[in-house]
Length: 103
Image 1 (cartoon, rainbow, N blue to C red):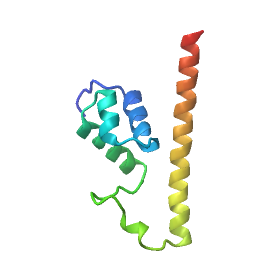
Image 2 (cartoon, helix red, strand yellow):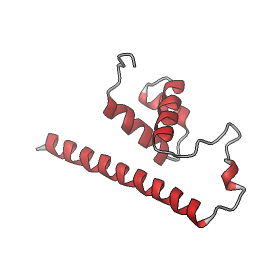
Image 3 (cartoon, rainbow, N blue to C red):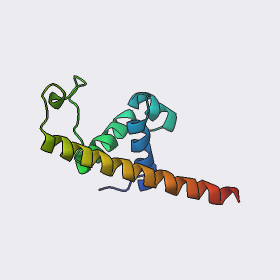
Image 4 (cartoon, one colour):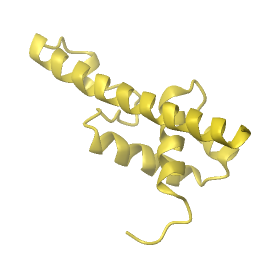
């Protein structure tokens, strides 16, 4: 990987913002002054690393149209739970960081 001008923390928080926001990825990229394709790549890499289904360009996944078994649902929910725990931990760290700066 080449040297990036963005820190890992910035990349992670940007991805979390995309995943948790109602705003479009393009708008978030503009707001953060990041190339739109770069932000899309970060999100795609994050989803691959965390086994989160990546939607095709049509905007919906095939799994939405097919009933999932209980085992598949458990697997999906475990992955979602893992993601939510990571998001919570990021928010805790950010809160502690900003609280420390205000003191």
